[in-house]
Length: 201
Image (tube, rainbow, N blue to C red; front, side):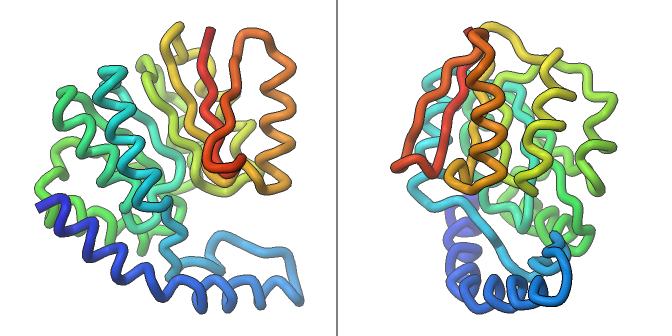
């Protein structure tokens, strides 16, 4: 069921291009906002998703936190992995309509029991998070990468991995430059710099 659901969502995401252009067009008169992309999937690629599944299996990752659910494609890949490691996912989504649809997709895929969805600003919904994190997936609003990283840093351990999507964007590069200054972390570029995997040493 999970593979079929992912395939269906990727098929729907084929129309993302025009939705993204419409969202960007709104920024001509004002700063761009997350709500400008409330209808866009903004998803990771299928290859990224499959690599994440393999990473979770290989490293036996159980406790996963995701910043940026959108309609749930990336979360479904994470669920494929934790279903085997007997783990769980806490994922966040700012836009309520997206979160509602994502939950429908999780139920359809039969993995809703593995996923907790927190709706709202992640700097609020994850503020009291106190469990160890094996994998943190950053794939939301880029200027929040550093605040969320800092907020959750106390939950990292020696084997924690941080997966940074859209690492080639300006705000992401600023975030990564800051993290690279700390010798506690090791950064590895993937997908021609579009993704960076951060390891806690």
